[in-house]
Every structure is written in structure tokens, then in C-alpha cells.
Image (tube, rainbow, N blue to C red):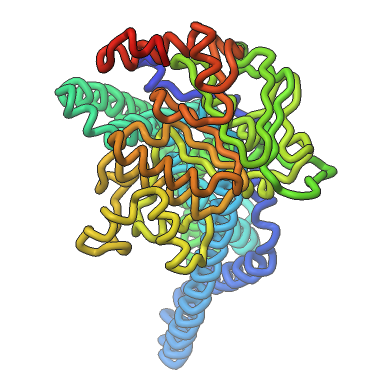
Length: 601
């Protein structure tokens, strides 16, 4: 039984990788946008170079305009400032649009690749990974990577260009003042190193707990009817509050680390300003530097200091981006255990011939099926019965290769499923799952899901066979009725009938009905069976059921017990054996008919 702790804990672990590897992966994703990035950086460099000319204009005003009262020069310099500002604004706007488009395109492709990877994963992946966790990666972590890309390509590049440019311009004025300003960079670099070592694990913990919280919310919202049925709202609210408090605590821990480092780094970077003014004032007093150059140098010192002051913020964004990237690349790096073979072998014809030979299957280390063999010839109906957990559903999942077996072979139309193309194999098999799932769309779209473009006559024909047509026609909007999330707008029996219609509209050669009529009444079930019987010979049908009435007319009945074939035969043959099937039969009829009459059956 699943514990509350297991519900809260992520089902996978990954180690924090080397940042160089993560950076290489992220930048590798930007390779298709090299042209845009180069153009954006060029615009950024041009805009910031124009910005770096402003202190030189100020020096000209101090050294020439003010002492000489040269107002003509002042107007020329003023016009130059306005012109440079307009050009700079245009460059910055174009740069912003280029980088935004680039980041959105990069994340679009990453999201598409991630979704494709998730679609390619086998059932085993979804047995061990929570939907809430996956959604957290698809939303919060993707946005975290996008923010990193934007901050690196825009803010970090901008500050780097400004820093290098200011260093060059200030060096042309006075290398001594430049050296004094840079003196604070050494302790800042040391602090940034230790800050990164502490903040990165903190952000990773926040991301992990966010995934846990999303899982909690997703499960409880999806299962809200169960929660209400058992009056567990207070308990679930309390559990959500605990997970929410953990998120808050982890966020506060990351904030505390930031708060401890940021003021110190800001203080160290600010020390360069008074130090530069002290040295610069001394040089002016000695006549080694003119006043205009000192004022210009003061303008550059703030440009130099600003990247140093923002170093803590850069490290913070860097840590968040790498933390998010690790989780995304974890999914992208996951190989699927079930995939197309390198050399595909296809059956000569799709007839629905199924043969299992000595099949053994295990979920991880738990053996579910042991040495199971069966054969269903084209057009036959085979029923699978057994106690809950005996491996009935798993056995039929192997036909479509949702899982790979441990030993033996699963043959469909004479070819092992492991050698067949997965899409073509699954195209020949129609499933009515035990857990009926309908999309939040119209009934018509749900019935035609497997066969887009079906005409209405074919859709209606499938619905008539599944006994879904009568109730659909009575709905206010008929076929265009939207069933709601997971089909919650319909009753259990109605959902099952729509699901059967969907499988029939798919027109498969093999039809799998996994407890497909458990929610319908006996009369409707009989009508469905008659409709399916009219199609007998056109497809091979597998029926998993608990009702004897659902399997009584099957050509072959397989009884599983603890993952093994305990009995096989027709209805009458199994009754004569007086074994497990006979016991099931007796359990179902003893309350309705005279036992002596049953014995004579």
C-alpha cells in the first residue's frame, strides 16, 4: 500500500552534475540561433559603446565648455548626446526583441523535445514517475532555463561588455585609478565562489519540493470526489499545508543565503568608489590629472562597479538555471526500455493471430507472469479470468508491447512483437482499458480519436454496436456534447460504452476488452455482446471480465492463478473440471438459482 511519505517523495534521484556539462548542454541548444545571438550581441555592444562615450562628453564640458563659456560647443555636445541616446534606444529595443524571440524559440524546441521524449516512454516510466512532478518540469523548470538564457545572453553579456569597455576607457584616462577600482574584484570573486556552492543546492531543493507540492495538488484535485466521499478534506488540506510549508522554508533558506552574501558583496564592490576618489583627488591636487578626467573616471567607475555589485544576482540566476536544466536533461537523457528495433520485420498480413509461448514477465523484481502460453487464432474470442492481481491486464498489455517480457515470446501474426514497428503493431490492436479515460472534448471527437477523419456513418455504426448511440442522441448537444475532464460529465456505464465505440471505430484486428462492461447493466451488456458477436470472425477478441455472463460464449477461457495458467477450455469444459472456474461460477449463481439446477448445467 502506498504511504503518505511515498506520495510526497519524488520517484527518481539524480546527482547534481558538473556546471560545465550543464552549460555545454544549454549552449548546445542555442547553436541553431547563432546568427540571432551574434546580431543581438553586436547591437548590445554598439549600444553600450555609445553609453561609454557619455563620460568623455562630460569631460569635454568640464574642461572646455565651462571654463571658456563655449556655448556653441555645449549645444553641439548636447545634440550629440540626444542623437546617441536615440540610436542607443533603437539598438536596445532591437536587441531585446531578438533575444526574447531567441529564448522563446529555444524553449519551444526544448519543450517539444521533452514532450516527444515523454510520449516515447514506456508504461514502466509512468509507473514510477508522478504526473505532478512531470508537469513541474514542463512549467517551472522550463521557465527557469529560459530566464537563465535571457539573463546570460542579455544581462550578463551587457554587463560584461560594459565592464570591459569601461575598463578600456578608464585605462586610457588613468591606469592607476583603474587598478584601484579593480582591487575589490579579488575578494568579490572569492565570495561569489562560496556563494555559488551554497545557493545551488538550495535552489535544487526548492525545485524538488515544488515538484512534490505540484504532485500533491494534482493528485488531490484529480481525486477530489474520492476525498469528499471519505470526508478527508481536513487531512488532505493538512498534508498540502505541510508540503507548502516545506516549499516556503526552502525558499526562505535560499533567501537567507542570498541575504547573507549579497550585502557583503555589495559592500566590497562599493569600496572601490571612495578609494578611487581618494587616489583621483590626490592626483588632481598634484596636477597629474585634470578635473574633467577625474569626473569622467567617476562615471566609468560606476559602470565598472555595477557588474561587481550584480555578481551575487548573476550567481543566483546561474544556480537556478543549472538546477532547472539538470531536471530537464534528466528526462531528455532517459532512454525508453521499449522502442522500435533497428531492423523491423512486419507480418505478411494483419489477421489477428496471437501466440504466446512460455512468457515470463516481472515488474522490477516481482514476477507477475510465469511460463504462460496461449494461442488465439484469427476471429476467435479468448476470455481471461482470475483473481485480482493474477496478471490478466498485464498479459494483454504484452500484445501491444507496452512492456518487454523477461523470457519467452509474444507473436502477433507470426512475428515477435519485439521485431515489429511499434506504431503499426499498436495500430492493429484496439484497447478498452479498465480505467476508462475520455478526453475533455466532444463525444464525436472521443469516438473518432484513433481514426481522425472518420465520416459520421462510421462513428455512428461503432456507437450503435457499443450501445452508446441511444444515450448520445438524447443528450442536449448530441454528438457535440463535451464530456468534461476524464469524461466526468458521463456516468461510468456511459463512459465505458463510448470507450468501446472508440475501440471499434479504430477498426483493429485485435480487440482487447479489459473489464469493459463492468459498469453497465446486464441487459446492456447482453446487447453489446450481441453487437460484438455480429462482428465475429472479423477480429480476434480478448475479454478480461469477472462476470461469467461476459465470457460464457468465448471460444477459449484462460484462468490465471498467481501469474500462471491454472485452467483453459470452453465454458462447459471448465465447469466439468470442477476447478477454479467452476468455483467462480458457483459463487456468482448460488444466490439466484437452485444449486441442483446448476449441477445439471
